Amino acid sequence: MALLEFYGKECPHCVTMEPLVEKLAKEDKLVFERFEVWHDEKNAAKLETYDKGRCGGVPFFINTETDKFICGEDSYEALKALAQGK
Image (tube, rainbow, N blue to C red; front, side):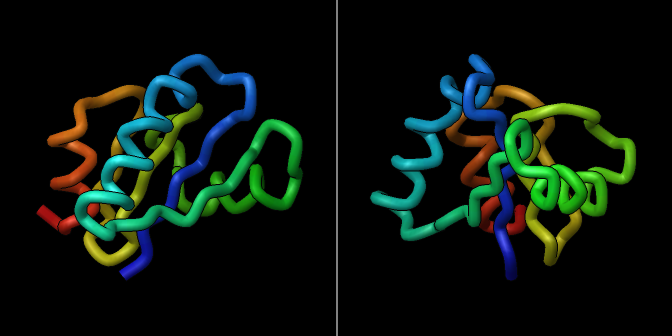
């Protein structure tokens, strides 16, 4: 299973989600592979591959095993459920 996070370095919504991502890694050992898309064209292209027009922005979190995703800010509980495949 791959957990992916696409974010923009200066994105305020991404900054809001960062502590939740860190908490998830620390407490539950669920780690998202992170890709900065605003300053990296390869990562931006990768985002388009996974987004498929569903979100159109960042932050974008996806569980590649379930194809479930979160677009934008959400709760810790929602992020954890996504990471656990629920």
